[in-house]
Length: 103
Image (cartoon, rainbow, N blue to C red; front, top):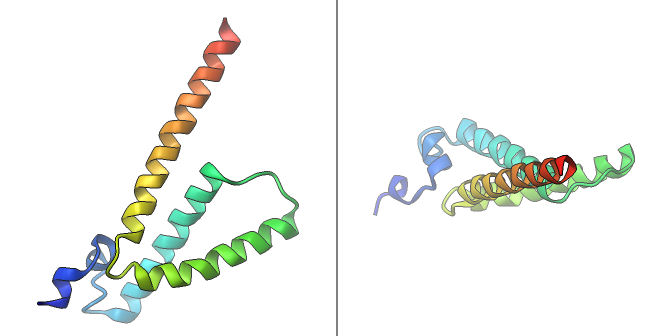
């Protein structure tokens, strides 16, 4: 079996098998951005700057492990789905609050 056939979507998109260094960095940045979006939409609260910095530091460190798993597993794709679900939830919540305020 060819390695390119087993790659996840983002790993294949960034051609991790052909250019591993650049591909892994692009995959890492993509997973960090998606994790930040999912965190902000679903879990983030207003915190002091130092606490937020610590949380994001650990989030970025955790994304390192996720990047290695994301080469063959659909980590990035799962984060995209999670982000879309949370975006839809936030839009619906905003519409409901707007509707309740208008009544």
